[in-house]
Each structure stands twice: as structure tokens, then as C-alpha cells.
Length: 175
Length: 129
Image (cartoon, rainbow over all chains, first blue to last red; front, side, top):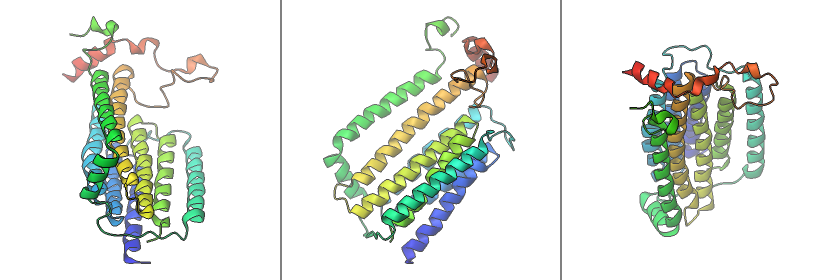
């Protein structure tokens, strides 16, 4: 086991452990905070894999934006602060069985397929320069399409969440 | 570094996400579990990009695109969840059974019928002020 593998395994244990806490904790706000830890460990794993730009984008967008959005969602839906006993559904055991089966299948397939594959880790493979030139030379069309998608999602979210620009039925009541 | 490490971690994260989507009742927790699954896919994309030594960096660029799509998805998803909360006063996915089929018991919908009247939104707005 090389040093990189040890660091990666530790970060992976943190990510998987906090992921388990996300789906099992009884406090809604704690789930979002465990999600921060899981995403941070994932960013560390990207760093170990020499994908530094992706790691910082992960920190900025996931930890910085998405978790804050989720916390706002928790706040705006008047979620109970503190332990909520009914966060889990009644089909929890079926879900656990499905998840364990998925994990067993995926891990078996992955280990059988790539058990002895080694990958070279060279510094600079995922730097901002390399990724920037890849995005703006090769992948510029999907990049632009994605910006349109983001804009439409933005407009859609605004239209969905404002109450005064609803359909004709609600226009009479809105002020 | 062995390729099996990131692949196994990604598989485990994906299964955790599957469990969360199936077992949680709160819609925001379901969205969080979806994010876990998306992150597992991202980890796979980065690992295989490094493994292939892709000169075009397809995997990492697709990871960036997936992150952006996840941001769009979470924005829209939260807007829908907030709209559901505004209309139904609950985001418990087990109790939102209006679109369910095959229970054979129409009275099982324990929501009041006219719950999607636009008046509820105004009331809640009033309460928020």
C-alpha cells in the first residue's frame, strides 16, 4: 500500500462514514452538516487523484452553494430542530436490503473488472490550465449548452418559487 | 495507485445514496441522497479519466458539467419542494400519494381534497410576515 493509497483509503472511510450518517441521522440539520464532511472528503480524494481543479470546484459549489441551499430548504419548510423520530420510512429494511445488494453487486463487478489495474498519478493532470484548455477547445459546445441549461433552471426556479407570477387561477389572489 | 480504491468508494457511496432515496421520508433528505449518488458518479469519472490518461480530459470536464447540472437540479428540486410545502404543509414523501396508483383505496389519500387551492400560499405568506 503506497502513501497515496493510505490517504485515499482514509478519506474514503471518512466520506463513506459521513455518508452513512447523512442517511441515518435523526436530526435534519445534522444530515446537511454530515453532507459537508462527506463532500469535503470527496474533494480531498479528487486532490489525491491529481484533479485539483475539480476538487476546488467541488468545494465551491457543493460545500459552498448546494449545502447552503439545502439548509435554506430545511429552514423554509419549518423542519423540526432537534431529533425527529419520523424521518425514516416504513420500508427501511427493504431499502437496506436493496442498498446492500447494490453495494455487493457493484463492488464485486468493480473488483473483478479492475482489481489489478494501476493508474499513474502525475502532477498537473487536472490543473486549471489543462482543464481550461480542454473546456474551451474541445468541449466548448457542451459548455455553452450547459450555460443555457443553467439559465433555464434559474428562470424555472424563480417562476416556481414566486407566488405573485403564478397561473391565471392564482393571479386573482396575489397582490 | 490501484483503480479499485476509487471505484469501490464510489460504489459504496452510490449504495448509501440508494438507501437514502428509498428509506427517507423527508423530501430534502431524499435530495441529499441524490447528491450522494451524483458524487459517486463524479468520483468514478475522475478516477477513470486519470486511469485512461485522457488527453482531452473528458472525464474531468464531464465531472464539472455534472456538478453544474447537480446545482441546477438542486435549485429546481428545492423550488418544487417548497411549492409542495406551501400547498400541502408537508414534504413527507410517504404522505404525498395523490399520484399513487394501485392502492385500490382512494380514501387512502389522507390529504384534504382542495389542498392545492391557491389560498394556502397566501395564508402562509401572511403567517410568515
